[in-house]
Length: 323
Image (tube, rainbow, N blue to C red):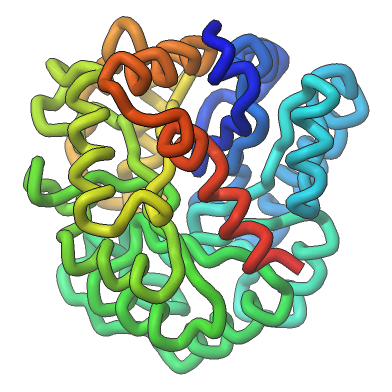
């Protein structure tokens, strides 16, 4: 592990893995300072509460590994103590049901990132795989205001183009694509155009770059160097201070898990045909995070650029958005 990796804040904009002690140990072994950890996708209110309850039990059971993140200072504390800061996040807003009074409740429990829609439409707006994007609903406008009021970061990664643009304009705070890849390098309905990413950056937001193979230029043949190419493209579009890492690692996931992700509402129509997510051998697991830093150094990027990309830019955004 390089000195730069050891000294830098390393923050992953999104990981959705088979949570448990093995993954927690991998996060610590990889030198992760903190990560936005998905604890809700298609689940409604009760199941979303249950998921956070399980995380609370893990925090008690593994205090030597985990630290729940409520504030940016908690990320710095996790770094100082050699623990992994866990940022609880949702990849959908359906956990609130139709009751905005629940937004402050989940904020108190530690929910810090909420994606407005996942793949398809919900009460707030349309997802990127919906056949017609009708934009942000009136209720969605109210939800944006409620999330702003609680200082919860809004994520647009799976949100439809028109809905995402409406959210950027409606939000009083910067928003993010926590995990996406450039459409310019690979045409895929989950990837984002330069214009979409630039809009977020111009409003002070951040673009986390995913390494998920189906979204990369050469699919399962993509290498760590291809990932750096994607990062460089987004830097060229958005600027060095508006780009970050959001791997979307799916460590421990089974075909059944992917099936749940890729069907409407978890069990409905097939949205995307599941294909094996074959990550590069040198950056396919969370514990291999030091290889990413080493590859950045080999490419000749400055220490300042690497530190921003690895975590400095996320910390800046969290300081601006979180209450």
